[in-house]
Structure formats: C-alpha cells, structure tokens
Length: 245
Image 1 (cartoon, helix red, strand yellow):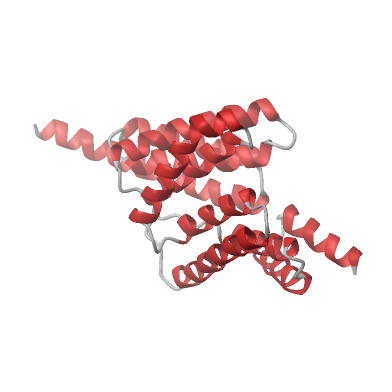
Image 2 (cartoon, rainbow, N blue to C red):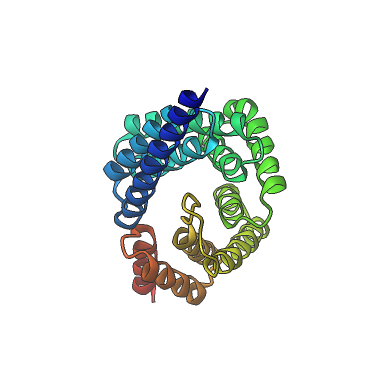
C-alpha cells in the first residue's frame, strides 16, 4: 500500500511538472500566435494526462491548446485545423466526463460544436443541441468566469444577423471584459487559466465596427494590440478603420 501511495505521489509530481511546462508553452504560443507552440503545449498536457488520467485539469488544458492551434491553422491548413478541432473535442469531452462542473470545458465545447455547424442546416440539427447544452452548463457552472462569457459572446458575434443581436453580443463581451479586469486583480493558482482577455477586446472592437461605431472600435483594437501585439485581427481591423477615415 505504501509503495502504491509513493508511486501515485510521484506520478502526480511528474504530471504537475509537465502541466507547468505546458502552461508556460501555451502562454508563449498565445503571445506569438504560434500554432506549432500550441501543438507543443498540447503534447505536454497529453503526457501529463497519461500520468493522472482521473484528473480533468490536463484534459481541459490539452483541449484549450488544441482549440487555439485550430484557430491559428484554419485559414491556411484546413485539414490540420480540422484534426486539431476533433482532438480538442475529444480532450474536452473527457474533461467534462471527469468533472461535470468544469465550466470552461463546457464553454469551449459549446464554441467548437457551434463552429462545426458553420451555417449548415443539417449540421445545426445534429450539433445544435450540444451547443445549447454545453453553453447552459458553462453559464450554470461559471457565471462569473470571464472566459465563459467571452466564448459565449464570440458565439453570439458569429451568429448575429442584425443590430439587436450584435448589441446582445456586445453586451456579453463587455460583461466578459469586466470579469477579466476583476480576475486580473487576483493572483492565479498554479494551473489556473488566464487566457482570453486580449482576444475579448478584439471581439469588442469587431462588434463596434459592425455597428458602425468606429471610434470605439479603434479604441478597443488599440487596447487589444497593447496587450497582444501579434493579434493580426486587431491590427487589420484598426488598419481598415484608419484607411476608411
């Protein structure tokens, strides 16, 4: 029994070290917007998960890394992006099976299944219930989690068809911005996620731009770039506004 306990503690220590290395790689990948480094982070988390397969933490982080790898790849490597999406879904589904209360895993799953719909009616019938279920679970489990609100806001942004729905997306994204600001005042735990704030600012800028409110849009694109200079979406959005003016 003592030997089993010792082996378990060693596995947890090794897993924790790999998780910390993965989080450091994830942060570097996010700042550089580097798909290869997101992939490297995902591999750290995969290795960590094999050592502690009963914990949701590494499956969440693996899914988050693969989600961002998919975002970085989808404009120029479609097949690789699709593979990253499916792997992210598998990891996140494992996370919520191990911990049904994990709000961010639910939020990411709602986003990923929404992306799989991609405007298709038949795909909406197939994946729509999963989107709704995971979004509801995310809001129920993490109503004050900024990434939950941010991911919900991005979904509303992508499905908005008129001014009223764009305003609803903006309201949700601004709520996420406030939650990110509150979160930034607290010291994070060793495995606690802190991604998403700069991208939230970019989406607020994009929403303001769609509403024709270019002054506010430019302000938020500049805020995003101040935090994340590699954000090409914010940079391109700001350039379009500057050219138009």
